[in-house]
Image (cartoon, rainbow, N blue to C red; front, side, top):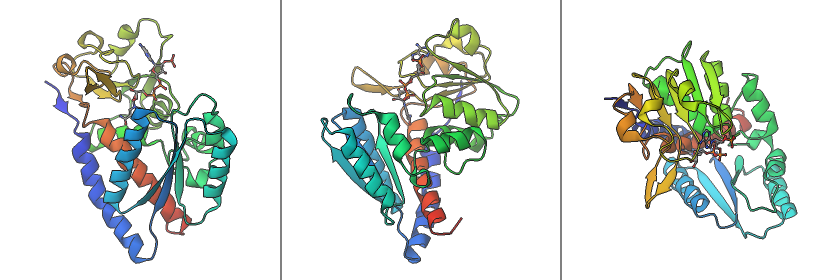
Length: 283
Ligand code: NDP
């Protein structure tokens, strides 16, 4: 049976260190301060925003939430981003996605000052990521790499299959795995014979939002399985992976909840502090 990759425990360990770092910054008169812009009433987004807020408070970081109505106009959000970009008190900002239909989310991301881009989703920071010259990284991808390293799982030379190619998870995971010298295959809805491909993987990372997509037949014995998915089935939070059966074959596996999720939130906080330190000449 596979060992559990305990993201929650690791996030708490990292949290202790970060709290100390924030405390020291505060003693120097600097309090990390970031803003989350949430447009509309997406229930999952509201939960994510609240989860971040709780974590920020725990770390000693100030998080402002700008809750905008569902019919907000693009220009209004752009004006808010401009204001926050220009405010020296604000160290970071992010737009909670998805945004309502009338909003061009890419245009919002482009408008964020890359030096305050806590999600690392501006074109400049995405470019830096692929050039292996990055200062901040998308939190989920960074959390996955850190978790695997924490459990001393070697990435160099490993065959990694990432299922999902979003800008926020799949692509940055692929970029960071490449940087770690893994051999990476990225799969998506157009991929033929998905199971044949995943069966060759030493490490499978699934980020699709399809509950139970990854079953035991799709995983080779001893593979490492990382489940990013967050899906609600009959009122229960489950991942993309058929955990009970896949864990019998895997060498290591992340649970949902308690795997990747807590690390995403923790690494967002790490990014806020990193950017705050840099903005204050403390690199
Ligand atoms: P997106 O919907 O943006 O992307 C999903 C990706 O999965 C797409 O590339 C899509 O392919 C691919 N996909 C969907 N179904 C299949 C399938 N049957 N076979 C192969 N590929 C498939 O989602 P996100 O990347 O934003 O999020 C993915 C999941 O991760 C969600 O459940 C989300 O809630 C969760 N999540 C969890 C986080 C955490 O911290 N644990 C953080 C962020 C997200 P195509 O491109 O062809 O459409």
